[in-house]
Length: 280
Image (cartoon, rainbow, N blue to C red; front, side, top):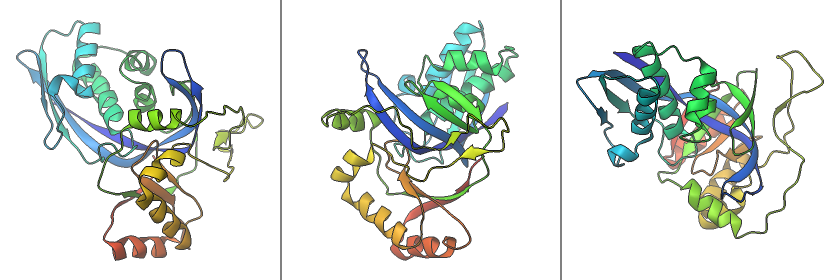
């Protein structure tokens, strides 16, 4: 049996630059994994693919874990079946990439369990057929993403402490893009996000511009004003940066010694569901 951690991510800034002719959207964002994670256990099985995912109301063959298992089994001509047990800790539909991370973990797990010998680059090539986020989760860490999210530049980023707020409901990314398309798209080449300094060769140096924005907030906050209220109250409690992750529904804020106590007190005071995490 192989046990793999599937780490969540946050988006540190996200710009939607336009819509392609194939229906996908071009974006620019910075991604970072955090230590909130699902757990995936993979073992050999007489035949086929069995998925056990308590609390996940998704038909088995539509589950990204199933699709990832089928893809790598076919690619590597793996004849034995696999049994996959998924324990969810990452909120579904929270903008934290849980489904994509789970799929990446399955690719890595079966690759190791059956000695397929695929390196990260090959696993990333396979993963992109299932979803644009999956290649990022093969490596994890921090990366600047372009295109539909598949063009990645990995870099080192200092460890950051965060609180992630989950409102108790999910938001569909497809819905969020549809709503955004109703607004006039204004592509722009400028990127006000965390990005490796191209003039600095040291991996320890990055540029940070706190004129960060997530374009999904323009539509999500209109339909979910409670999230705007939470963001406003977090800023009033001392947060110096708060944002949706992806299309939401989760919000996160950066912590330091000055604001941590106030932010935690605020969430405890309203009975919020939150996760105190750090980047990994």
